[in-house]
Length: 72
Image (cartoon, rainbow, N blue to C red; front, top):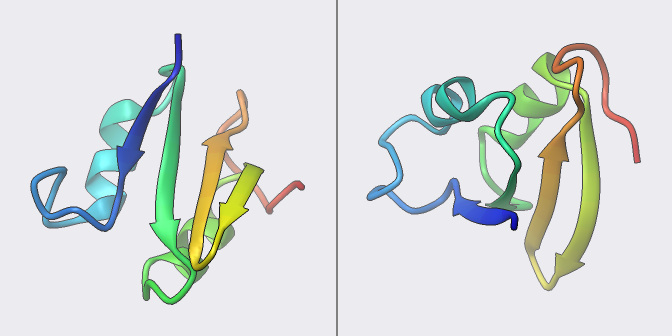
């Protein structure tokens, strides 16, 4: 079963990039606001697969190889 990690929630981590690194390779779905200043960094640093959008929230997974540009 996949877990969803809200990268906008400070209870998750004060640094969403740190949370991503920690959970890299795990079967999790991440959510982040489309307006988050971290989203462009995540898109540049990781190969992500967008799962869905709900309003301003984007749900995505990190591809198995983890690095490179975004895939939809």
